Image (cartoon, rainbow, N blue to C red; front, side, top):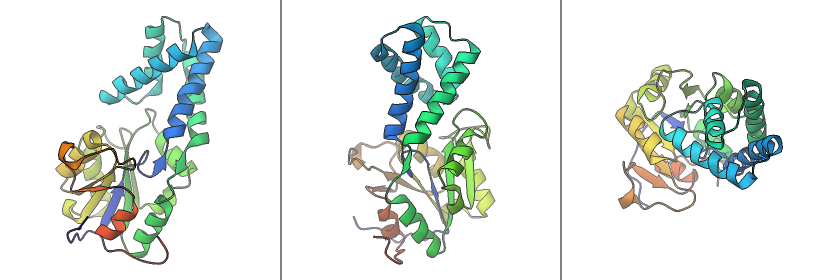
Length: 243
C-alpha cells in the first residue's frame, strides 16, 4: 500500500485486540466461568458457553461492560439464582482467568518503542471493563502503562464510552494536540473509527486476520493495516531493529 504523507505528533491505540492478544484470554475466561456455574448448578457447560457468548455480544452492542450485569442476565436466561456473592466470585474468576492468557502482540512493544524513539507522544483510549479502576489496573499489570503519556478509560474517565468522541477529545486535551495532529489505531470499525474521526483524528484499522475488505468496511478508516509495523511505514518512522 502506498501511504500518503501523514504528519502527526501523537499516536493513540485501542487496547484489547489491538495491542493485546486476548483471543485465548476471552475464551479461557468464558470457559472458567462456565465450568464454575456448571459445578454449582449442574447445567451443561456447552449451554452456559453459548449463553455467555450471546450475552457478551448483546451487552457490548449496548455499551454495557460491567460483568456483574452480564452475569445477572446469564442467571436470568439460565433460570438460576446467582446471588451477589456468587456473581462477585464469577467476576473474580473471569478476570483472573483473562489475565493468565492475555499477551502483548509480538509487534506491539517494538512498534511502541520505535514510535517513542521517533518522538511521538503515545496514548491509549479504551473502553471500561465495567468497574472503575479495573481496566487501568489490568494495563499496569500487563506492563504496558509505562509506554504511554495518557491512558483514557472511557466510562471510567469519561461519562461516555466509545464510539462517542468524548474519550478521544479528552486524550487530545491531555496531550495538548489537535485532532489532525493525532492518529488512532483500533480493531473495530463500529467503536474505534466514528469517535476518533469525530475528534478530527486520522483513523487506522488493524485487521490481523486479513478478514476485512476496505470497500465493505463502514465507516471506512483512513488506513487499513495488517500489522502494527505498518504504522511505522505510514509515519516514516524507521529506527533501530524494529523489523
